[in-house]
Image (cartoon, rainbow, N blue to C red):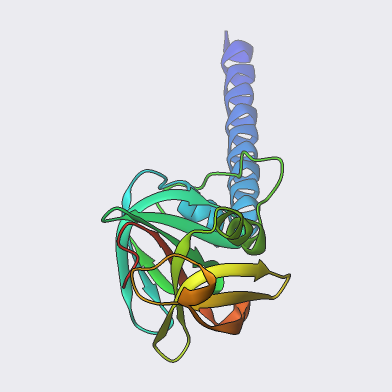
Length: 184
């Protein structure tokens, strides 16, 4: 009887040590995974939810988080869509409780997202550093810039409505708004 109790006690101690080691390993793996997470992973966990995104300029955009890519996010707000480069964000409220990996096999870059707007000849408003907004149609989207044909307010892109062309480095883009009411 005494030997059974002794071996039972040793067995319990061994299992307790093994459990602590397993818990420590799981905690370390969780810390490693967290350390490798991106802002996009943190935001992706809030897809479909309402967020408030503060830009570098101090402007605050409120809307439903519709899509998150490594370089940009898409907000739905008051009948318009807002493409916001991750680099333009100062902070985001209402997100970040859950991490979610990107399910897409192909990460859509910011230029790829803007090329969709260019292809559809959508009238957009681009807010750039310095608080300036430009309205027009994206004529060309390069790797690091866009070319915007500036159009008369309320008009689509036609030769007689174009008031000039502007090249904008993507690093200066804070938000691109498209939709029925794309003013900020």
